[in-house]
Image (tube, rainbow, N blue to C red; front, side, top):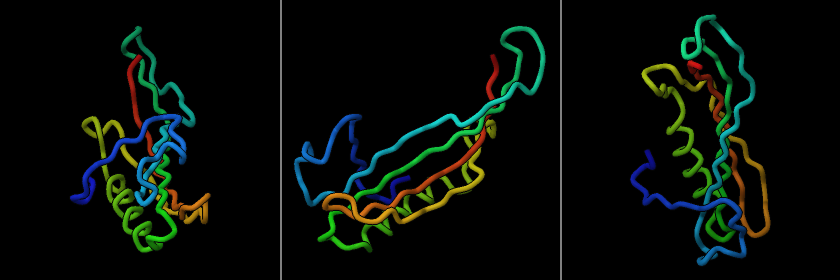
Length: 122
């Protein structure tokens, strides 16, 4: 799902000063549960809940590499979520939106927000 590029992992609490190569693009990914509601009754383990969630991908590309690279990486992130269903259809994305955030330190930032819904049993 990464468009043939080598996947790079960044860890929580890693700041710009911790990057080894300042010419590399990087991304931060966040998952947020936005809201939820119980949609069926039953015994424990048989109650169904529907939850709305968001995945945020913040893409940073050094200014010297140009905005074209940032746009290409944003399209890879959009393609990873758009029209995708997970867990046998129990989780799906309802909207995926790229948005240019502008300059951040020495980087161009583009954010991709993917909103979705999943069901769970409890």
